[in-house]
Length: 326
Ligand code: SF4
Image (tube, rainbow, N blue to C red; front, top):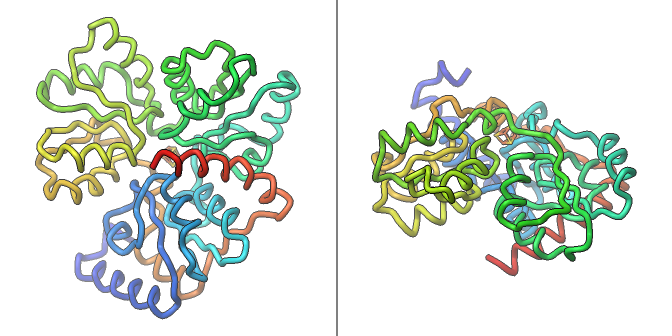
């Protein structure tokens, strides 16, 4: 549908979204990887942590989450008395799908005294079995806050887990072997090639990337002569805002480039590390689906109360730690 839409058609649908949003007193929260036309009509655009914090802050009766399903679930858990909808109910996440509640329950049985730290990219059922929910921007702080003698089960992203273990030096931390198919394909050779081609650029790398731990290791050994910053997408936005005159190569989903471009006023200084870092789940949300979603107030996201009650605990812990930092 999107490929055949003209710029004028997109603008007309965007106007409809704004009108519906006003009429229904709705609030749109979108992820940094969303399509530009969705970002432009959203009230808030950010990373999954920012989206959760924003969901909690808003007092609108109707909240539309433009992101993958676990993001809408998180908002629904935080807003049990509000209507939370998502334009595309099948927008999943390969990372969230890499561990089920049953697998986690089994893992916990093998480590009965361990603290369970779940990345926010998990289903509500998995969160309900976890002690902490983290994002890439606060995972290090959370691990550091857990007493050293307690074992930790970290899930589901192995690259983020290895990165955090490297930074914190934590020995008794077990990592689930999950990955995101978009970030896993990045390897240190991509970084070396980009560094050769863009010697003056700063490399912004997401810790979910398959190369993040390797990059730290090679850099520490002096084998990678490039200015690398490992950040969540929210961290990337903040850094680029503060340093608008640098050139950047960006290693995460390509949707972030539009967001960064808005911060620096032009795309000339920004390049993706790989053009093929596209999350097809994020791109399932299109402007025509957003119009229909607002018109029909669909698809409502509901989490069973007994799961929501348990899942809210680790999410609230994540928000408490993060609000102290922001
Ligand atoms: S980019 Fe990866 S982690 Fe993010 S939503 Fe897509 S599949 Fe999930």
